[in-house]
Image 1 (cartoon, protein in one colour):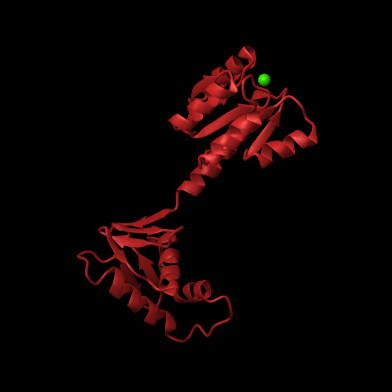
Image 2 (cartoon, helix red, strand yellow; image 1 turned 180 degrees about the horizontal axis):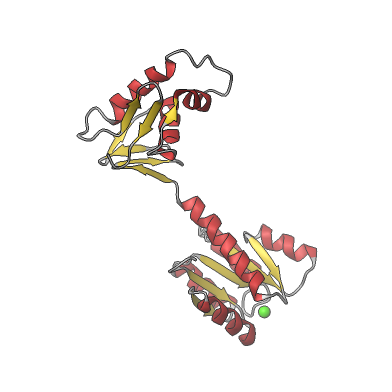
Length: 228
Ligand code: CA
């Protein structure tokens, strides 16, 4: 279920448009409709949507051109093409113009719904780049780490260690697993190299803050506690 998801539907055939709109609204999506390419493009550029469904054959401006214009404006919202033709060149042209998926008419509503869900899921996953432990925030795209809003500069290896610990937060991670994670080759896990990195990391993320996040579980491993 994706509550509060807003979908733009650009489709000129009234019957098809109302069939799709009604079906999506029954699934709790909110749907705006446009019945030609110009109107659709205007909405796409000025309103915010989580997904757009665009018919290829449209009056005033065809679907390919609408999508190319949307992408030219750096709008990355997922787009599903609806095409009446199942000619291979149409599909290629559709995906080349910047759509993420296409569906050939006539289609079963269930199939449309499955594709809508898949595209929204993909979108959600790409959006969720922030990992958190207490007031520590790690951005997995920029590798920026902050705590209480202050930036913390980490080496790539410290970052990798911290990301792994946060992904496993509130669980104890053994020294062996950590070693295997930061080295891609066989490493003598009896050495204390991980302890050295952990100490450096602790100095950076915990030392100047009132609440401790990184704990040593003596003889077992390490853990980041979210709710200590
Ligand atoms: Ca049409």
